[in-house]
Amino acid sequence: MSQAFELDNALGVSEAPRRPPSAFSGRLIALAAFLAYAALMGGAWWAVLRVFPASISLTVLGRTLDTDSVHEQLNNAFLIFMLLPTALWIEVAVVGWAKSSARQLLLDRTPSTKTDLAVFLLGQAHVLDVVGRLLTLGAAMVSGAWLHDWLTRTTGVSLASGTAFLPLPLQIVVFFFVYTFFDYWTHRTDHTRRFWPLHRYHHSAEDFAVLTSVRQHPAAFTAIFVINFPMAALGAPADVMIYVNVVVVCIGFVIHSKITSDWGWVGRWLVQSPHHHRLHHKLDMSTPTGHFAMAPVWDRLFGTWYDVGEKGLPIGVDTPYRHGFLVPRDMLRDYLHFWIGLTGRRNDGPKSDLAFLGTAPLPK
Ligand SMILES: [Zn+2]
Ligand SMILES: [Zn+2]
Image (cartoon, rainbow, N blue to C red; front, side):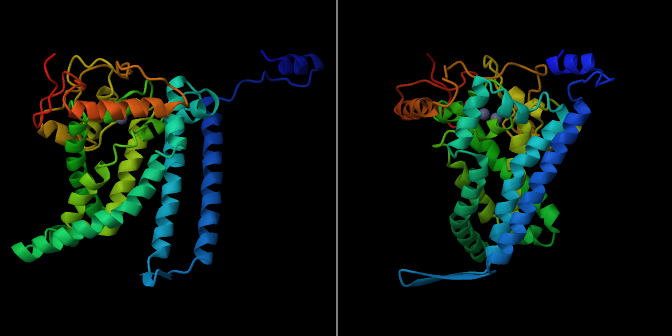
């Protein structure tokens, strides 16, 4: 019982005992904070759109660059600034403030959440990642679009025409499955002996805290091209690619949250649930990890769907990590392990994961 309460009682000020905020009022406060943030961002967005013209012409080194999509780019930037707060708020709405990542990150940081925060602050955040994706998308799209044109000219069939007649939301759904197909194989590659050291950093989290999604090794950047390039080559329109990326980042936040739901049949077939992603992060790697795909249908199709293990399994890796703000040291070590592994002088990788492209762990 707090001293203030005892004093109030002694003075007869308060009749009813004061309780800590209930789960309900905690959710209400979180909702109010979220709405205030959204209103602030909305105001800033409105002001910025008024300041910036819709098209800009820049002359750099004698070359003139014209862009007519300034406002679309700004819209996307603001959408990105809403992603993380939205994910944090959804988690509060589901698990309550007391158990939320937002509270843990602000008030009660564990060593593991400190690492997540450090990686986030160091700029390896998905928020920046998406900015990076938007920025690099241009490059991936030019080459992808070129490949798409070439395929169309050569074969006489436009792969994009198969989806162009669909309304935008359905195109997003179609290309979400295209994206997750390539993401599945990239992720399975990450779990092989050669690439594991760069992905291990992500698996070093000992608890989920939404931001765990951004705990990625800075050298693990190739997925942007690996995944977006095929989408562009298949003729995904630019806006569809951006929306698919936004959806994927949102799912990334939610599956690394403290929500423990398996989402029923949706989580078993369509979109990976937080429960199934926890199974993927399990510490005990004596049995295969599985659950690589953001769309479980790929795991089922390619034989990596196991769905065994209770909720709340311990997560992490055997390799020691120094948690907290001193992240560069372990990142450097993992990077060295990656190069040494390429020369065949190291044998990393979850020993039980399936052989794939001849990069299965070497026998010891
Ligand atoms: Zn993984
Ligand atoms: Zn993960």
